[in-house]
Length: 254
Image (cartoon, rainbow, N blue to C red; front, side, top):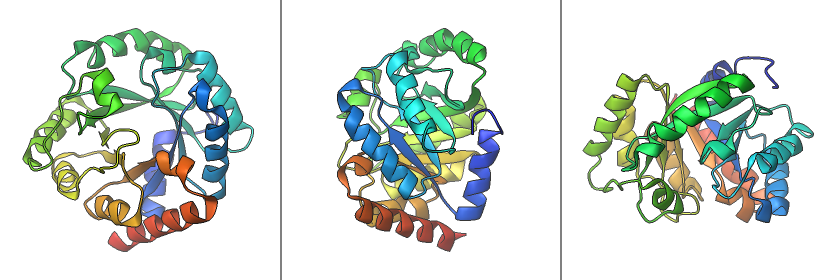
């Protein structure tokens, strides 16, 4: 889908028809090229809905461009950027998560990077997904880099404050992130509170490695799940079974 349609409409349509939108997170880190290429092949074989490219700070536009070209050569599914910083932007993608890291203590990740990136996004003609991004666990790499203040899992009411703020900022997407590679997923109670307060599309990622955790976040109200580590760690058969189970949970709740 190279600017051939509205990616947000596509995402919402998939949510309606398939019950859950599955995002495959592809890391453009130059030290993981072979691993990422294998993850792309698994995404295609298991019919993942949307490619997310990014999540790493150790990249430049060349690496992002190269990974997008690798995807384009094999799939027509939309490619959405998930930039860790301005260097994660590329004109070759279809859309971008325009992220506000709401629980950061560093103004750069709330408004500074966005100001620097906005002219590039405009010039590249990327479709924009205004996204409220919340990193739950303070022991993850993304929390360290983004100076995110962790949210206690036993205080789900706190997430409703962020969700309401996201509505008031005009965010159409909210991404609850456990952290890349984390062994702990976002608790269902947190997802449920976010769902009650947020009016838009709710994404959840981090620590989703089995059907128990995936089923919990879907049943609690997630519209989309982000799979990253499992794409690299699981073989194709196990990954296919996991995704099929996620589809069944998504369809069963609607």
